[in-house]
Length: 164
Figure: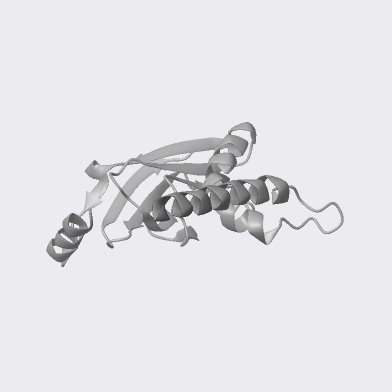
């Protein structure tokens, strides 16, 4: 009996969340503001929608595709190959992180080699250096082979194993 009540509550909650997301996902015509409910519940879909959107645009963008088991991205940093930080996403929790139009001011127009640094919820570090297209989107895949050893990782590995 108790499980049925919980199941009904969860079902209603999920349906209301989807409804609020779909209803609030459109910008207000007068203010151009997206509703806060849509921002909160729609965050799961936003980076995937951004990834689809940047494929059609002509500006420089980078789409990071995370292929790690049970990884929750804590931070994702886009920098030049010599270490100058271009952009940073601190709240990226999805498997796709999009750096949309990162070179608006053409500061990095002469740069073609960039680096992605990804830190997961256990503070494990992954890095990859790659070349960015002069225009359009560049896809970068991060997987286990991009892991960078750090001091204290043995504790992080134990914590990761316990929590999996």
